[in-house]
Image (cartoon, rainbow, N blue to C red):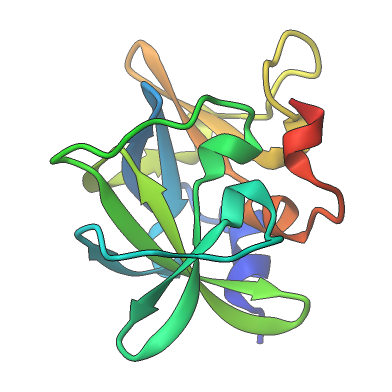
Length: 166
């Protein structure tokens, strides 16, 4: 049986469509595969973790468990921003080093669960991207815009400090 993280890499498989949860980060539309989303939360009190990587610098209490809280905009080299009334935390389950792990991801705004078409899927371009191409699973054209599906397995398994690459 494949883990959730392995499923995200090849989720399209033979399917023509993929259900995703869309959300905003710094004015860009991102999406997580709906199967990995555990819950959407209002903002919770955070506890800073000294010495942690900048994009995973704190933890939250999720149903009695301490889980890391990530701001993946920092992994992508975006500016950190303050929270707003629309800010939410999406709790996802990832396979990190062979272990199913819950992680909270801070977002600017959560939109909807929607279906994206395989026919609209494109690999990230190798030239002209402002982000690391391996941090992006794919781009999906939706209307005049693109939805970015991040490769969370790569982002969270990166051995080096992602802040240094910005």
